[in-house]
Amino acid sequence: MKLHEYQAKELLARYGVPVPGGRVARTPEEAEAVARDLGGKVVVKAQAHTGGRGKGGGVKLAGSPEEAKQAASEIIGMQLVTHQTGPQGLPVDSVLVEEQVDIDRELYLSVAIDNASGMPIVIASAAGGMEIEEVAESTPEQIHRQAVDPTTGFMPYQARALAFATGLDGDLMRPATALMAALVKAFEESDGTIAEVNPLAVTKDGRLLAADAKFSIDDNADFRHKDLMELRDTSQEEEREVEAHAAGIQNYVKLDGNIGCLVNGAGLAMATMDAIKFEGGQPANFLDIGTANNPEAVVAALKIIGSDPDVEAVLVNIFGGLARTDIIAEGVVQAKRQGLIDQPTVVRLAGTNVEEGARILDESGIELVRADGFAEAARKAVEAAG
Ligand code: GDP
Ligand code: MN
Image 1: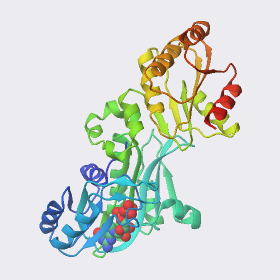
Image 2: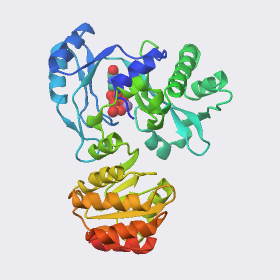
Image 3: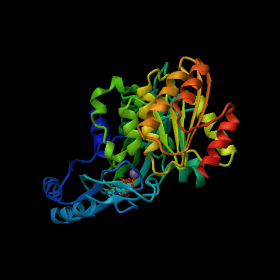
Image 4: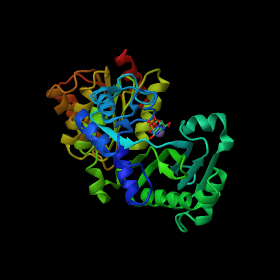
């Protein structure tokens, strides 16, 4: 789950990360009032779950409360398009109004999970303000890393090494190492997947400030963070992913293709997507229904797939272990009867109770394309999708 910048900054500030003074505003008038409280010279920033807001017209400098009001009226209500959002963009219904800081230098600092080592990794660069992928591409020597060994935690020498490497020496050493330690602590205690400060600003008067902040929390740890989960803004999320989440389906990801997939197990789901691609097709989603042992869960999943306007064919590919194929078959029949999937549907069942599953499908009288093998199922789905 992603936090908005203002939420991320509130969280980080609680851990002692210095952030500019500011508040969120939901109307131009509120933005004007906040700007007045802050002395007039402010930055007005679109709150949307994307980076690159600056280039997309979502970050504006204002010299007075009136200008802040004007900027907010341009930003609130916009559909913000950045290189990360796709052409449809993201809705903006609030802005963060912050005191303008006189920036001398922009650095980059983040904590993320390094999948190779399975450890959190702290990344710092003197090349801030631009995207880290760009820095990695053009000047990889400007990127510095320290892995956080969970048995020892983030060590002071690691913070000093990163500070030295990015030119945060002298008077900035102490605040820099304290800021890094605070960022790591916030990341660990919140079950973060990424905590990114870009830019980390060195101000003209020699202070360090988190001028921007992005923070994502591992959804699998949601039960440990009831308070943080209340910050979820579903207007920023894919509609069908929100619906899937509400139906208790954790693993649904919307994709670009036209073949809707209902699969059990993440491994089989990946293999199914590969098989579809191998046959020349494109999956419309990743969906792992897990051990769904009630037809209602199957119906809920098929409803989400069937209502996706991109879906031209549905592929149900189940290998029943703990999951029973007769229950899956029952769910498919119910979803068809309720008119939730009018796209051609290919069903391949294998494993537990497969004879019973086949019988349910046969006796239903519903038009389905049946397949025995995996490759055959993928091929028929690609054919059906045209
Ligand atoms: P992003 O484009 O979504 O990553 O949004 P940022 O918060 O990083 O803002 C983009 C850029 O706006 C930053 O890299 C800064 O150069 C600039 N910016 C943001 N806040 C301030 C500020 O208070 N003062 C100045 N001078 N520039 C700022
Ligand atoms: Mn930024």
